Length: 227
Image 1: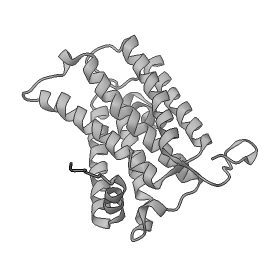
Image 2: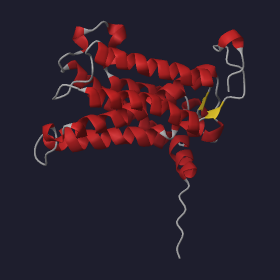
Image 3: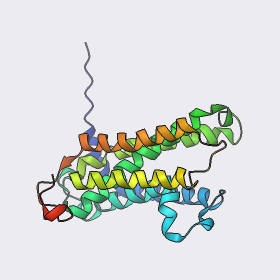
Image 4: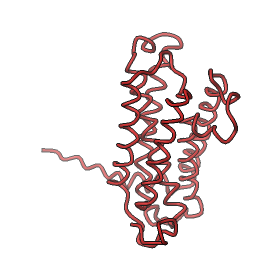
């Protein structure tokens, strides 16, 4: 019997610990961010319909890409050292936590949204190849990339709670105010419920996969310890 062992940590160390591969990933994320921004610029509604500071709530996938790009960029000063031992502090714990949950949620949300009404998207010719298969597969890569973050990042209970609140605020913005990502159909109860489940579920996953910071969180009530 042949046993195959997959050491994910070894691959994360290699790709995130070497300048060429880490730089390539950062450039790829930057390019994907621009593609996402272009989508929201030309959509209806679009960025032009919103105040600048609400862009992160409207552009869900570009926001996820911006967060993970910032998260990965924190490794640049640490190149040449083990990725697992990357320095951490409270602001970084919040950044890594938000990047993780935004990637997971909106990577999976896109798959759910496309497949609730597949007749509106599925096809094998022309634009349909990108509009369904391309978008779905690239957003699934969000999930893959997200699971590299807990390898070098840490979280706190307070960061997890803040992430949950932020995701739920985003949900209210999307469905309460009508600024959900542009779709070819009107979102109904199934999509809204799926979105709420993803908001809670991604924070639960983060709670399970992240190590806690072994220090005080000054953003916790009364400066209490938050692990």
